[in-house]
Image (tube, rainbow, N blue to C red):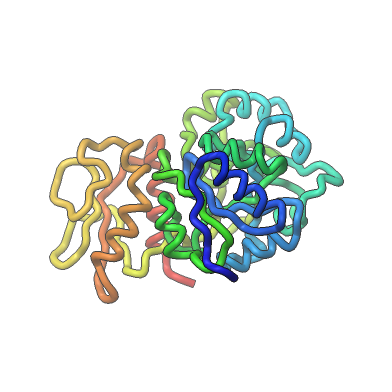
Amino acid sequence: MPDTESLLPDMPGLERAAGILRAGGLVAFPTETVYGLGGDARNSLAVAGIYEAKGRPRFNPLIVHCADIAMAETFGQFDDRARALAAAFWPGPLTLVVPIRMATGLSPLVTAELDTVALRIPAHPVAQTLIQSFGGPLAAPSANPSGKVSPTRAAHVAQGLSGRIAAIVDGGPCAVGVESTILGLDGPATLLRPGGIALEDIAALIGPVALYQKGEKLTAPGQLASHYAPAAPLRLNAQPEPGEIHIGFGPGPATLNLSPTGNLTEAAANLFHMLREADQLAGPKGRISAAPIPDTGLGRAINDRLARAAAPRP
């Protein structure tokens, strides 16, 4: 493959990106959560290219990014709960897993041949304009090699995927910094992955939400036990020890601090970038530790990502 193009987030850059997508190529682009690796969700060769570029297991389904609710409803069956959540949180960092409609035109690789589809409308203006310029649904997992730390800057994408994809649209740092919340609605409402929308806010709108139990069948992205992993081993809920690169939260000694004031929104935005920095500082034989994070609101998503980053590697 030729060198990966770097595109500006202006109309010429986005028109170029849309043309690459229409031709079956892959383009990384910013969303409010992390950078996504986009391909035409209706083109099996493009979707297969996403799995190949990332080294992603084929049984792990992808999120379909849509321009608006009307587009999303052409692919998935929405009940009253889904419509209420879409009205409240879209565009935004919420993915809904709903029963798939028949004859949608989506590649079966997108859904890993499940009878559900994961749908999202991103809020980032670059992502919005790109999807509208392309004129169709984009399959877009995070733009990083599978299992590694997710990218929140264009440089992160280039570090992992340069030479494997056609282009990267550089839209600056991502504001939310952790991936979307994924909610299963093909039965009782179930939190499949915590993320940018707090569980408490979802439950306030639709009532009680069950929690996905590890070991159950994979029905959405982001459910693998080991994911978002730096090369160095990571200790959680820890106080710093000599020789460790310590990621702090709130006041206290730290090599890097997610939020010196203990702000969970700031911490989420900094998480993946600081995991990468800590890994570089630790070096080949180093160790990383992370301070305790409150397990409420965005803290639930931060702790989920840290637990997967610290999990034993397959």
